[in-house]
Amino acid sequence: MKRSPLVVIFTTVFIDLVGFGIVIPVLPFYAEGTRFNATPRTVGLLFASYSVMQLIFSPVLGRLSDKHGRRPVLLISIIGTGIGFLFLGFATTLWMLFVGRILDGITGGNISTAQAYIADVTTKEDRAKGLGLIGAAFGLGFVLGPAIGGILSRWGVAVPFFFAAGLCFANAVLLYFTLPETVTRDHPARTSAAGGRGLQQLIKSLKEPRLSFVLTIYFLFIVAFSIMTASFSLFTMFRFGYDAQHTGYLFAYVGIIAVIIQGGLIGRLVKRFGELPLVIVGALFFAGSLFAVPFVGPQVGGLLALLIGGGVFSAGNSLATPSLTSLASKSVGRGEQGSILGVTQSVASLARAVGPALAAFLIHSSIAYRGADGASHFMSDHSLFVTFWTGAGIMFLAFLLAAYFTRVHASDYSEDSVAEAA
Image (cartoon, rainbow, N blue to C red; front, side, top):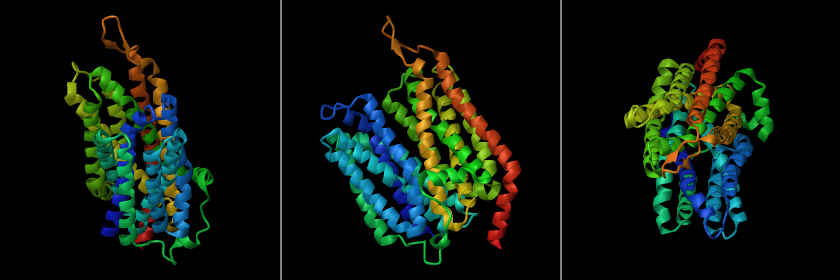
């Protein structure tokens, strides 16, 4: 495994995720301020525009990287993301905010290209370990991005966007001078006729039984993850009385566990047990934590139980998601890595749109109201359980699919590994 290029790739994805994290706490206040007077629905559309663009353009960028090389696609996309942040920072009208988010969504699909680069420079045995770096970058960005955004906003609500733009341009300079190209003239991607564009490639991939299983399980994981993130703050706020700062500490704790597992342990675990067993165990961990957390409260387990539940959830997700990405990568040849990993990111983008929408529907009747005694109450504690248990049910379905997939297709991956070794 080539370490120095992977450091550059890790830095690229980390900066992408820091920028994404910076936007989360700042954009709602920025858009709803006196300059733009955006409604909550408009703010929701701003966030949705990013995910929709990633859904459409992740496979496109992946395919372009197969055809023209990873390096130019990464470089152009990083610069595009920086320009998107500048649009946000200099925005004077609402349409400029949408241009910034749409441009960032289009170019933010470069994660699939970064994953394809890792696939180029790793063997199948080390694939999950390399792709775990992407997960570690996600975790660190998840921890640091919102904190940086909150701190920098003290000097002006637009300052975080200018900072994120500066990070992007600095990263582009680093990439230009240090990252070698992996798609050389004799690379299979140069001559491969496989693949397609955008959603056509997604539909084509779903027609392949082995790959469709992996993408379906991956989709279920991301949906459940999105349900958790959309409802967890509400849960801690009204069950424990936590504010945004304390809930942020919990998310940081979850992110740190993800960094430890995906950045350091996943490679060893895959070599010892294989990807499929880790997906199964991860799904069980994830389902169990989502089922149990709603029972937790100040008088039932307290903070310790909440930390255990969050830790188990993070461990389950961190074991499974890089393993699934590795399986998707192994399902196709070297000439299709950019395309298929672009499809994987499109599936994730779709799941990130479905999960919060489903959570919003399920927790609608759980929104707190202020009673005559001045205290906040849940309108229905039952619907709170339903929200988390729906996520648990989705993960149990993922567990069943992973168990069936292991029984039917495990030998396929063993044969692939033997063939590559030979």
